[in-house]
Image (cartoon, rainbow, N blue to C red; front, side, top):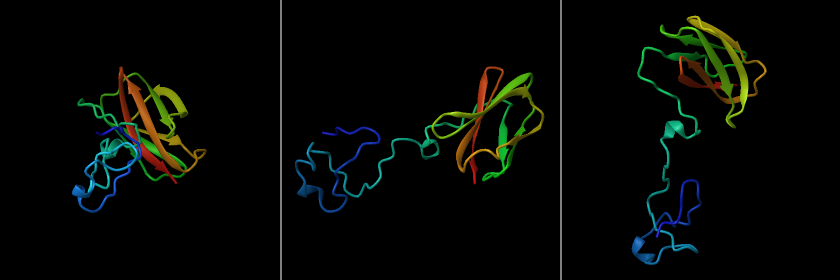
Length: 137
Protein backbone atom coordinates (compact mmCIF):
# COMPACT_ATOMS: atom_id res chain seq x y z
CA UNK A 1 0.00 0.00 0.00
CA UNK A 2 1.36 3.44 -0.91
CA UNK A 3 -0.02 5.96 1.57
CA UNK A 4 2.29 8.85 0.76
CA UNK A 5 1.72 11.93 -1.37
CA UNK A 6 4.10 14.58 -2.62
CA UNK A 7 6.46 16.04 -0.06
CA UNK A 8 5.98 13.23 2.47
CA UNK A 9 8.73 11.40 4.29
CA UNK A 10 9.29 7.79 3.32
CA UNK A 11 10.94 5.03 5.33
CA UNK A 12 12.56 3.07 2.47
CA UNK A 13 15.74 1.14 3.25
CA UNK A 14 17.10 2.36 -0.16
CA UNK A 15 19.44 -0.62 -0.44
CA UNK A 16 19.26 -4.40 -0.21
CA UNK A 17 16.91 -7.05 -1.49
CA UNK A 18 13.17 -6.21 -1.72
CA UNK A 19 12.40 -9.83 -0.81
CA UNK A 20 13.69 -9.07 2.70
CA UNK A 21 10.74 -6.70 3.16
CA UNK A 22 7.60 -8.73 2.25
CA UNK A 23 5.30 -6.51 4.33
CA UNK A 24 6.92 -3.18 3.61
CA UNK A 25 8.86 -1.00 5.98
CA UNK A 26 7.94 1.56 8.59
CA UNK A 27 4.82 1.98 10.70
CA UNK A 28 2.46 2.13 7.70
CA UNK A 29 3.81 -0.82 5.76
CA UNK A 30 5.20 1.44 3.05
CA UNK A 31 5.83 0.16 -0.46
CA UNK A 32 9.54 -0.62 -0.77
CA UNK A 33 11.39 1.29 -3.46
CA UNK A 34 14.94 0.03 -3.25
CA UNK A 35 17.36 1.74 -5.68
CA UNK A 36 14.86 4.59 -6.10
CA UNK A 37 16.44 7.32 -4.00
CA UNK A 38 14.41 10.24 -5.37
CA UNK A 39 10.82 10.21 -6.49
CA UNK A 40 10.05 13.37 -8.44
CA UNK A 41 6.50 14.56 -8.15
CA UNK A 42 6.92 17.61 -10.41
CA UNK A 43 8.88 18.62 -13.44
CA UNK A 44 12.30 19.78 -12.23
CA UNK A 45 11.88 23.20 -13.89
CA UNK A 46 8.76 23.94 -11.86
CA UNK A 47 9.99 22.70 -8.50
CA UNK A 48 9.62 26.23 -7.14
CA UNK A 49 5.89 25.98 -7.67
CA UNK A 50 5.86 28.88 -10.13
CA UNK A 51 5.60 27.84 -13.77
CA UNK A 52 7.31 29.92 -16.37
CA UNK A 53 4.44 30.38 -18.77
CA UNK A 54 5.20 29.54 -22.37
CA UNK A 55 2.39 30.65 -24.60
CA UNK A 56 2.63 29.88 -28.31
CA UNK A 57 2.11 33.33 -29.74
CA UNK A 58 4.27 36.09 -31.13
CA UNK A 59 5.02 37.61 -27.72
CA UNK A 60 7.92 36.69 -25.47
CA UNK A 61 10.09 38.26 -22.76
CA UNK A 62 13.69 37.82 -21.68
CA UNK A 63 15.22 38.97 -18.38
CA UNK A 64 18.94 39.62 -17.89
CA UNK A 65 21.39 39.59 -16.24
CA UNK A 66 20.76 36.71 -13.89
CA UNK A 67 22.21 36.78 -11.33
CA UNK A 68 21.68 40.51 -11.01
CA UNK A 69 22.54 43.06 -8.34
CA UNK A 70 21.07 46.53 -8.95
CA UNK A 71 19.04 46.38 -12.18
CA UNK A 72 17.44 43.85 -14.50
CA UNK A 73 16.55 44.50 -18.10
CA UNK A 74 13.40 43.05 -19.57
CA UNK A 75 13.50 42.64 -23.33
CA UNK A 76 10.19 42.13 -25.13
CA UNK A 77 9.38 40.86 -28.58
CA UNK A 78 7.10 42.69 -30.98
CA UNK A 79 3.42 42.28 -30.31
CA UNK A 80 3.04 43.92 -26.91
CA UNK A 81 0.59 46.78 -27.21
CA UNK A 82 -1.15 49.01 -24.73
CA UNK A 83 -0.52 49.06 -21.01
CA UNK A 84 1.18 46.05 -19.41
CA UNK A 85 1.31 45.17 -15.73
CA UNK A 86 4.80 44.23 -14.54
CA UNK A 87 5.20 42.47 -11.20
CA UNK A 88 8.07 40.80 -9.36
CA UNK A 89 7.29 38.04 -6.87
CA UNK A 90 9.49 36.45 -4.22
CA UNK A 91 9.52 32.70 -3.52
CA UNK A 92 6.69 33.06 -1.03
CA UNK A 93 4.47 34.53 -3.75
CA UNK A 94 4.55 38.03 -2.31
CA UNK A 95 4.65 40.91 -4.78
CA UNK A 96 7.79 43.00 -4.17
CA UNK A 97 7.40 45.24 -7.23
CA UNK A 98 4.47 46.35 -9.35
CA UNK A 99 4.11 48.85 -12.18
CA UNK A 100 1.81 49.43 -15.13
CA UNK A 101 3.12 51.04 -18.29
CA UNK A 102 3.49 50.81 -22.03
CA UNK A 103 6.47 48.58 -22.76
CA UNK A 104 9.35 49.39 -25.06
CA UNK A 105 11.72 46.82 -26.56
CA UNK A 106 13.92 47.16 -23.47
CA UNK A 107 12.75 48.09 -19.97
CA UNK A 108 15.13 48.52 -17.02
CA UNK A 109 13.88 47.79 -13.49
CA UNK A 110 15.69 48.86 -10.31
CA UNK A 111 16.04 45.82 -8.00
CA UNK A 112 18.67 47.28 -5.64
CA UNK A 113 16.26 47.00 -2.67
CA UNK A 114 15.67 43.25 -3.18
CA UNK A 115 17.42 40.75 -0.94
CA UNK A 116 19.50 37.99 -2.56
CA UNK A 117 17.33 35.11 -3.76
CA UNK A 118 15.12 33.80 -6.55
CA UNK A 119 12.41 36.03 -8.00
CA UNK A 120 9.85 35.86 -10.78
CA UNK A 121 9.03 38.62 -13.22
CA UNK A 122 5.46 38.50 -14.49
CA UNK A 123 4.10 40.59 -17.37
CA UNK A 124 0.38 40.72 -18.10
CA UNK A 125 -0.66 42.05 -21.49
CA UNK A 126 -3.90 41.66 -23.47
CA UNK A 127 -5.25 39.04 -21.05
CA UNK A 128 -2.13 36.86 -21.29
CA UNK A 129 0.62 36.31 -18.70
CA UNK A 130 4.33 35.90 -19.42
CA UNK A 131 6.90 35.11 -16.75
CA UNK A 132 10.61 34.57 -16.23
CA UNK A 133 12.69 33.53 -13.26
CA UNK A 134 15.79 35.49 -12.24
CA UNK A 135 18.30 35.52 -9.40
CA UNK A 136 19.43 38.45 -7.25
CA UNK A 137 22.88 38.09 -5.70
